[in-house]
Picture 1 (cartoon, helix red, strand yellow):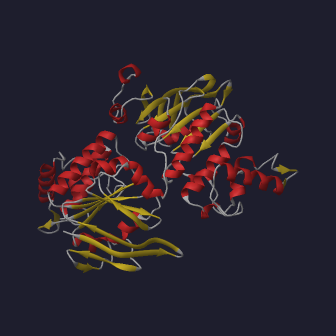
Picture 2: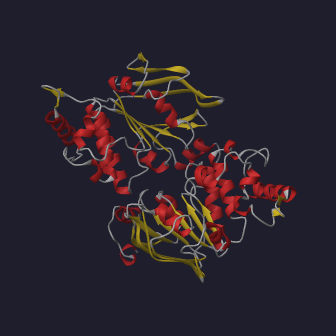
Picture 3: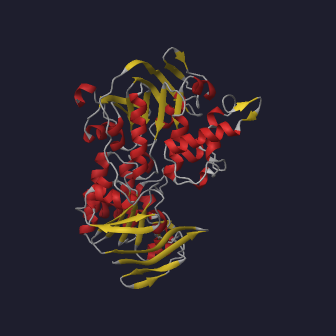
Length: 505
């Protein structure tokens, strides 16, 4: 089935999320929709799937105009969507999830699970999914859960399949398996829309590429287009895609975490007996699929969460149960993984956000009063140094782009002497140009002698920044390996395979 989007426009108040976008996807084609987070890709697909109503434009299937008042209409027309965050019920089986909302009944109201199981087996065998219809979804690895989502769409006879950032929660091996699955689906005649911001994946799997920037189509490209050219289309200028960093020169004491355990309210270990060390002048990268204890580990190190056992030391200072203010005073900078929730106050100005962690005393507060001239001069210096694109330091930080918001966070954390920088997902949701800038500042911080911990689900980011890499799986560190370890080895570790440093070298 051929999909056409003509002049799709979607506004949210004064914000134009999609501006007259045209897109054509042919049967048997993998069409990559490439763009940074916030470019308008997911909004466009939500319009296609009936989750949003376009303000202007048309959706056509095989030349026939469509009107979708909800996802049910889109599914009945032959459109399926695999969302970035899976829409599965963990306590139900594979077959039960596949038929949920589209159940067949027989007799006096009995669910026809025999037919459901047979349908799952048929689709699984056709595309090589190897799914057990009776397995509980909650017991399945993330990559297998994604196959369940795909089978769920195919069971509803989807002839156009949208995959929204499908590799965000996958290991490299699971990503490779997904790419192979996409090719099999395309070979069977399915039209696929693959939404991503990862240049390497686009070049590996795409038959056609459309780049969206600021809600508009910035251009189209062929699979052979270089990553540099694709990045230029995404950002609008040339960018450096590799991290230029000299060899590390570790020195002095840094962070030491011994036997750290963090439990939730039910007593389950979210961080399980973790031991790590990072010296001044080096970057320790922490890799892993999201949800394997990285968030809780960072919270324990930065004083946001009290551990159940173990110690956190920075040089001679014991920070195990120190409060956030004591951790900051010890010289710890923290770039949180969710800047809007944990890193910034959206209604505050840029200047006010730049001193959130120093708003209780000198040099910005004296005798209970804010020294506004001092604050303004400091803010102007940081805005210039960190290239924050704004017309005024009084602008509310929520009005900045994601990349500029992240620069405000980075500027604040690096504006004072640090012994340790903990950067969690430091480039999540920012454009390629801002990634280049942020990576350079992290390397400069390392080279100044600061111990740096970078937590990222992006393997390329970890490989580009880290001098050593620790991989977490289900709350434990399965191994620490040197820089230069292959993606394949890291992928195995992210799936829980313990590998010693000597094995990876």
